[in-house]
Image (cartoon, rainbow, N blue to C red; front, side, top):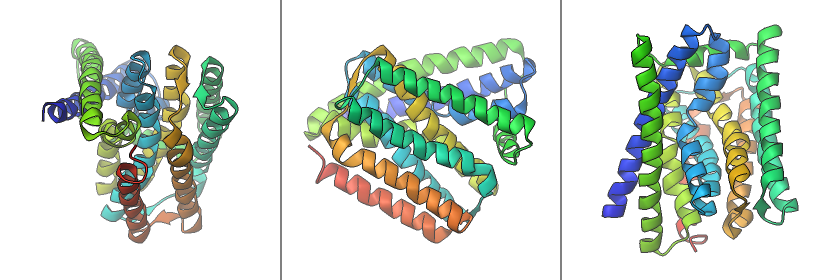
Length: 322
């Protein structure tokens, strides 16, 4: 019970801290004259991954690579199957293929890059792999901003809308700084509390830390993505909901794993090699297929995604729970 309380408390701190950090950063960006386009791409699109970043970096430094990698892979699976499944059930999600083609293809490419680097690295992500991840992330950011800023890509409106989804931003400079610092502090404390609870639960249930990282920790750290996406779905802003998940998945793989592997070599758990990385790639390809065939995520497709997540969780604690 204590470990479960630690887990819930850690998730709560991470969620509140992530929200505070995003709101403070958005206000600071507006005061500094940063465009809504860039704010949407970087601050909102990637800022929702702040809990995953803090938890994975903390786990890597604490010599718990299974949680560090499991958190990223599990979050990407949950973002697609769980979050977009829920959003599509709320409302059918029509999307603009031209607006999302770059991000959807980049997400699939990042998944393939992860699998390739793990394969040639003998099951371990090291500093050289980290550099490749981070270089790919910088290239993506430059490409995203350049294509939308100078070629009037329709996805520019998507990222501008992302920056407007959050309201009730801090007004004064003092409150802005306080909000950012409070968010960072809550993220750091929350990651420590979450890790204590996650490790304790893994020991009590007799399952590997990878399983807990891929499921409980991954879902907990994905709550900011869930919040933004559900709000966007309720407001019928389908492009924002889908774009938020795509941007988050790209940053999870290229940014979070890049930073984590740069700090500490990360051996990849056998079950991730055998099962989870293939689920992540399969979910990415299925989403890409749904987006391009019907140009929308229907309620039926949302149900398929959500059912797929239920099957994945079931297998995680049974066939692949060791």
